[in-house]
Image (tube, rainbow, N blue to C red; front, side, top):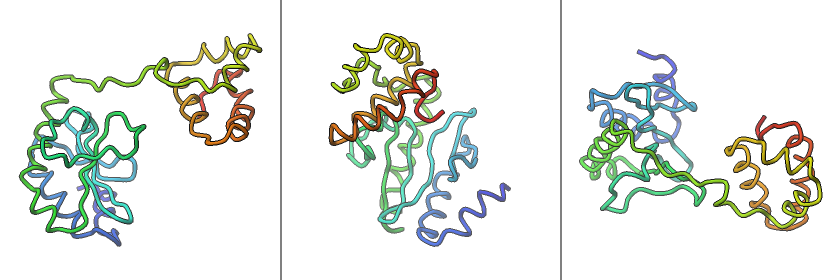
Length: 193
C-alpha cells in the first residue's frame, strides 16, 4: 500500500466519494499498477501512463494520457485546451454520473491499454506547425547569433518558446516576453530551464 496515494484519497476535501469510486473501477483492471505522479493517482502498465484521477473546482475527471487515440463514439472525452495534443478527460460532477458511465470508463481503459501495448503514438505538432510571431521573426532576421542559438535549441524548446510568445494577446506583451528570454535563448536554455 502506497501511503502517499492513500493520503490523496483520505485527505480529499472535494470529490472524495467520486475519487474512491473511480479508483475502484480503474483498479478492477488487474493489468494496471497504481502509482502517484504529478500529485495524483496514476495508473500504469509496464511503466507507461494510462489514466490519472484528478479534481478541479467544477468537476473531477479521469485523464487518458493518449486519449486522442481512443475511439470516443459517445463524445465524452474532452480536450482541456486547444494546445493539449494527446491527453483527454472524462469529467464527472457526482457519483451517479460515474455509475452511469462505468461500462464506458472500463471500455476506454481497455482501449487505452491496447493503444499503449500496440506502441501507437499521438502525432505531435512539429515546430513548423507553430506560427512565428512577427516581432520574433524580425529579431531572428536582424540578429544572426540569436537566430543560430534559437535554431540550435531542441524542437521541444523551440515549440515552448513559440507557444509562449504566441499566447500574448498584445504586441507589447509579446515583445516583453521575447526580451525577457533573449539571453536564455542565447544560452541554449528552454523556457523552463
